[in-house]
Image (cartoon, rainbow, N blue to C red; front, side, top):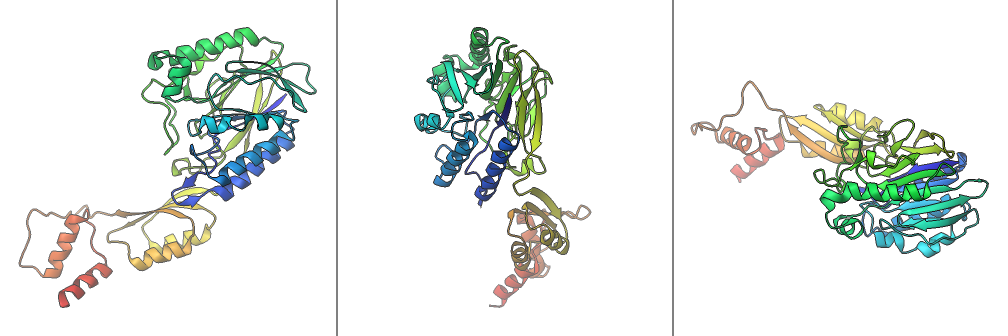
Length: 401
């Protein structure tokens, strides 16, 4: 049995003022094509389907069109759970219509999915946070423990009042109870969740830059040791870089986001995970690199000409550009930079201090020329950055008016 694991689509996400919708259209098409080329039997989407609780029309349409094509008219099950960016009610809302297309949408933790039959599979049985499927062409079932993201209010509702103490314990006990009840070696056993999970004693994984954090202190940290022994593969969402925090025999995998969504992810390769699973055996999985999406690049220059040359040679990038200088960036240079490249997300001017002659504002020589006085004053107010010629000319014009 082949399973495609993906996560953290963040449909509708912007990078500052830059829309990523065109790139998301392309990468969703790429994921659909990979699912077909790999002839996968099941698709798992481990949360953060959208970037906001109230996504725009374009993002919603792209999501529904993508999962419908992934489901191949009900012949291939698609299971999508909510992440911390998603509104669980929005995810749950179209479930009756989605099921008719072979799509299972899970917005809340411990959700119960009503058994149903689609063209290529059946949901045989269900429990709180559990479903068992029978797929056409396979004489064994697949069991899936699922835990959509829950914020503090929902965690208290579903997992008890003492969240800070009980979260790990409650999840571990719930998963273990389901595994012992339903997960024997006569079927494939999978866990999918959108949680911050780490291995005991391992360095903490950085959460995505600029994202809503899940882990507050250690209260929301889930340990991978909580995963029942019966589980053969754990499909996680939330961390945007591909990472297996489990073992080769029992993978616990963050599949990564499909695009680089912040400059902290600049240079990362993004993946989907293709899992090969049989009952009672260790799974194998392959990560397949995604090709779509503009590269995010951080560049630093101290020469305008070199900067313009590089920008001209790399038009299909999104850039965080740092310019080092001893004076304010000239208006014509700023204009030229933006005219040269359409993908400059951030332009960061950095002051280069004169370390041998740092400005000292403790004493002011009032006998010096007023222009020199102005330059000293300007440096005192702008971190020792000298005024450029445009500012000096404007000052002289004001003096002479």
